[in-house]
Amino acid sequence: MCGMEIWINPACSKCRSALTLLDAEGADYTVRRYLEDVPTEDEIRDVLDRLGLEPWDITRTQEAVAKELAVKEWAKDAGARERWIRALAEHPKLIQRPIITADDGTAVVARTDEAVRDALSR
Figure 1 (cartoon, rainbow, N blue to C red):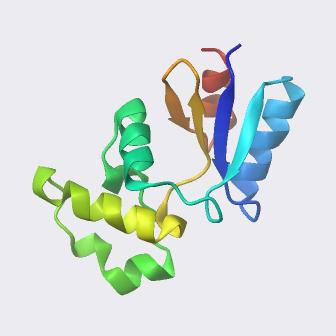
Figure 2 (tube, rainbow, N blue to C red; figure 1 turned 90 degrees about the vertical axis):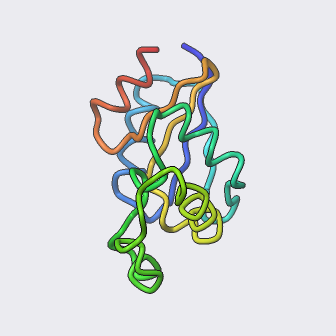
């Protein structure tokens, strides 16, 4: 099993659940409290590439800041991609969580036990 990093918000029940499962499986991982240790735009691009997703796919559109920015109105195309990435870097609360990145270059949005197990099985 390779080493992993998990981006979490300690206040999030899905994050706590993912950590509990990782611990139960004896996983080798490090915790990144991404609201304090905010990912750079390049790190966000890297995670998106690993996930095979676009920034709007990992944006929490129900957050207050998302509503203030009116992100639901933003275009979802190649021309708007950098705007979304910049918003995620400037407002990390918008980033879906938890996200597990593995040393093998893969990543998953680990909102379910199945997704965490998927990360563990790589």
